Amino acid sequence: MREKTMNDGIAEWRDWLSFIGSPEQTIMSYHDPLVRFVHDHRMGEKLVSDVDERTLDLYINPTSSAGVATRRLRQAGVKSFFKFCSKKLYCEWNPAELMKIRYKALTFEQQEPKVRGHYTEDEFNQLMDYLVDFVDNAKVYCELRRLPRARFWANASSLAFWTGLRFGDICTLEKASLQGDRLIVHTNKRNKRVALDLDLPYLGEGLIPDLLRKVPENSGIYFFPEEKVLYDRDPACKTWSTSFRNWAKYAGIEGKSFHCLRHAFVTRLREDGMSYDKIGELVGHSSEETTKGYAHS
Image (cartoon, rainbow, N blue to C red; front, side, top):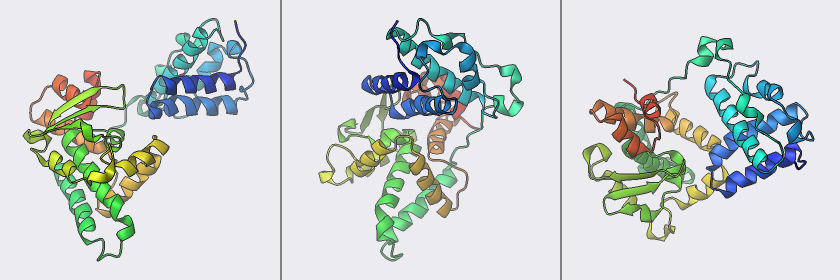
């Protein structure tokens, strides 16, 4: 067995996840909380082989109000980390395999998933009316500095509402993805392939190809090159989330994130009678249960 400290092991594991192409947001979701835990418990110089299941229980089952989703994410993270370390012979086995989330110790609020709303058609139209008006009248409002961001949010919101694409996939959308009236996207999350016939009514009936074809020819291989650069710097989308919520607030809409537009897409298709399996194919979900969680009545 080879000796490796927790700090060094975590750094090497993170580099490996990046090397094999894991989505940056997933890496950060696994990596950052574990780094904070190791730092707070002064385990950085402790050998990986000396960490046991009781120590990990403090991480996966904290005394805080963390909900089930957070605990499952932590569990997946430490399993990934110790699986990597066991393969590298930094430990004999993966102690995270013994870890269980202690559901009986959780309150109802901790066990119940948070209900995420969706944009209704009226709310979407309200948002678009505000953004389009801002773009058309930015000079009148003396807001030319904010014009590029308003234009991007108008385009991105339309894409999310009519195609269900995630924010990261929109920022990294390549021009080659548009094949006539068909959009083919290899998504950032699990590299799922999504193929969308954009001439269909529930996919905008030609609205999206027209929108994308208006992008300047000199913008390179990406439809939104500036946003692609900014997204690469902030894949966790914290800055983007705040920005979008602010624009939505200006439009008179409170408490709705950009991801709620993706929920709206799933909800609309389900209300039209489409099966969960088919919707799952269109949004790149691996599980029908995940798709069901996106549909709101």
